[in-house]
Picture 1 (cartoon, rainbow, N blue to C red):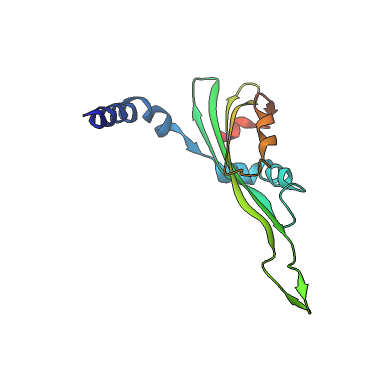
Picture 2: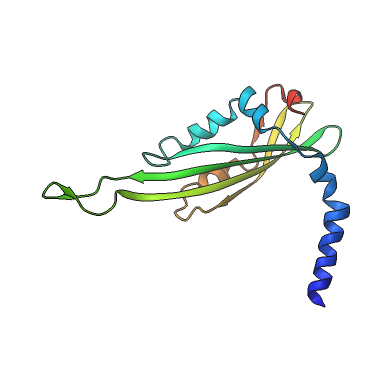
Length: 155
C-alpha cells in the first residue's frame, strides 16, 4: 500500500509539475560547443590536474525558461583522471600493469542566467565518482557569476 502511494505521488509530480521544466528544456550543447569557449575552458580545467593522460569534456548543456528574464541552465561534464606509469622491469621485461590511477568523475552544474545582463550564476555543483577528491575544486564555482557573451543567441 505504501509503495502504491509513492507511485501515485510520483505520477502526480511527473504529470503536473515537472513537465513544465522537461517540455521546455532545450538542448543547446552543440550550439554552445560551436559558439563559446566553454568546452575549451572545461578541458583547461583538467590540464595539469587529471594525470598525464587524463582529460575533461563538456557533455551537455540544457536551458529552460523560468520567467521573462531568467533561465535555468544545467551543464554536465566529465573529467577522466588517468595517471599512467610504466611498469617496473626485471631483466628488461615489464612486470605488472602500468596504470597508477584511472577513474571518471561526473560533474553537473546548475545555474540561473539573467538574459538582460548575460550573467550566469552558478547555484550548485554536484560531483560524483570522485573517490580521491581530485575534483573538489569545482565546488568553489558555487555562488560565482560568469558573463556569458551573447547569451540571447542561445535562448
